[in-house]
Figure 1 (cartoon, rainbow, N blue to C red):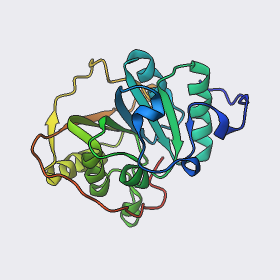
Figure 2: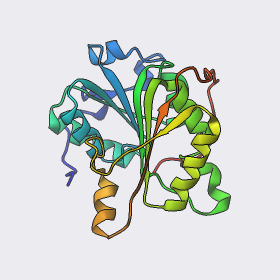
Figure 3: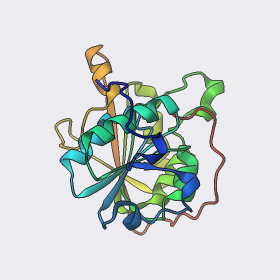
Length: 226
C-alpha cells in the first residue's frame, strides 16, 4: 500500500518530477534521463504501482508516468521517490496535450493505459480516455514496432477500444499471454482481482510503413483520466 507520507521537499523539487512550467516542449528524453534508453509512457499512472515495478524490472528502460489528478499524482511521486529508482519521471498533465506537444514523434517504445474510468453513460462518451483521438496520438508518439498496451475490467469498453484501434489502420494486434513478463499489476488490477472481477487486456504494435501522423495540439475531453 502506498502511504501518504510527507515528501522531503515541495513536490516540484522532487528529482523525479517534471514541471511543465520550467520546460519547453517537446521533451528531449536524453536530457530528461541523462541517457539514451527506451522510453515507456504510462497514461493515467494513478498511485504509480505499475510504473515503479516496471522501472525495477526493466532498468534499461526509462519510465514516464502521466497523471492528471493531483491526489494520485502525489501518491505516485511518493512511491517513486521512496523506490530510489533513477529511471522514473512523473508529470502532472492532461494525457492528450502531453502526447500532442511533449512527446517527440516516434520516440516512445511503449504506451500503457490501464483501467481508465469507462464513463459508461453515453452522454459522457467524450470524457473517455480510450477513444480514437488517443490512439492517433499514441501512434504518432510510438516508434515503429512500439507497443500500445490497454487493460480494463469492463469488457465492452475494451472490446470497443480494440475495434477503434483496428479502425485507425495504424496498429497490428499482438498476442499478450496472461503469464507474459510485462503483464505487471496496477493498483486497480490488484483491487479488482481481489473482488473477483475478470480483467481484460489487449496489446498492439505500431505498424511499419503505416501512415505518418502529423497532428496539431488537441483539446482534451474533460475528466478523461481515472
